[in-house]
Picture 1 (spheres, rainbow, N blue to C red):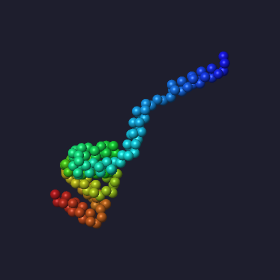
Picture 2: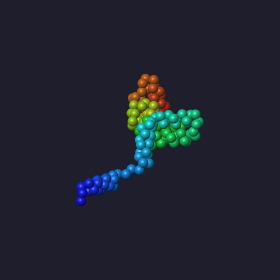
Picture 3: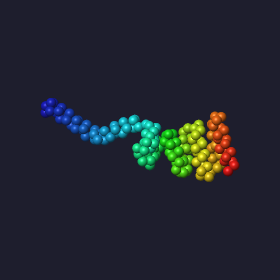
Picture 4: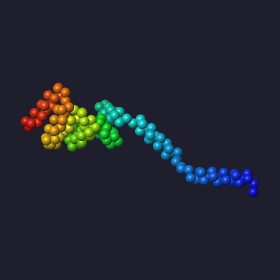
Length: 163
């Protein structure tokens, strides 16, 4: 047998083996992966919260739809300060104090020096009837406060003691 045809047959078999064992990714999946990566890199959670709040303020979307958008950010980014803080405030407005407590605890876990989060947490705790935890939280806020805020917090503690 001549060498020429044998070499061509060997190359053909090697090429077939290479194609057979090569991983195959359909073009649609490749595009989906690339689209998700692009979407992830362009997704700024704080901007999404701001956008939802603007839609809420302007009336461009129904309130619950805007809240669901903010909640989606909090689900995707559980430690996001802006989403949790906003949802905490909205929970306070709708008397969902247990949810507010959870949101403000998340904020404080990530931003332990956030004075306002401590104050809102204390108010939510008060509204659930947990005055001991509320007093502890007010005292923590007191340790973080400047002189102006200290007098306000001291008054809140005083009001708590008289009730």
